[in-house]
Length: 224
Image (cartoon, rainbow, N blue to C red; front, top):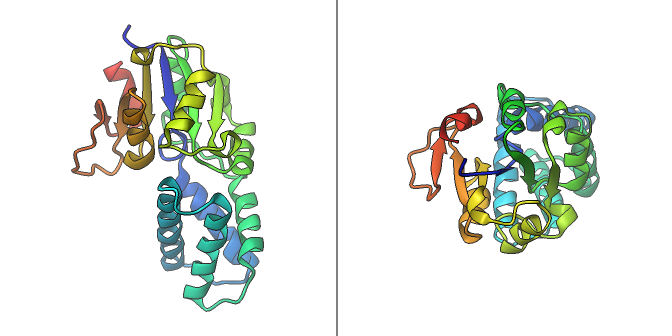
């Protein structure tokens, strides 16, 4: 058995973040009496994704990310509201939305009998602890490493150094990072000298640099 330790990204790898985001932004729009529409959901998602890319590049802090995304969202809608307070409410809604992707729970259950499973996530502490707290997936996870708790974000080497210092396995050749993000999961694994598996759920035609590529996390058992 080549690997002993599997380091799983959470959102869009094991959890359905798109569904969670839709739940939270809908609840926020209802709170602010903004008519809910698919166009507004898409607008928020695009703004949010760009802010997270800026965070990964070290261009904004987490607090700035939270404020800026709602400053931009409200400005685009012509809504006058406090972005900091909106972000606080949104994160509370998001912390309630721990939807597991189809097949992910069963995959973790199967793999936990042979491998040590860990979570590596860039999500906010209050959100991820809330979503993971009552999740059945945690039965199969040894530990969850949340970037806000650590003080560094994927793909920073310091984040991965912290993770490597706190897991049982010390041989990098026996570890595998599994995630959907090329810019955080795969880049971080490559920078740290760890094999990686890209979960290419959108079937993007790009050179990922990953050791393996699968379309869905349930396919992981076929390459291990």
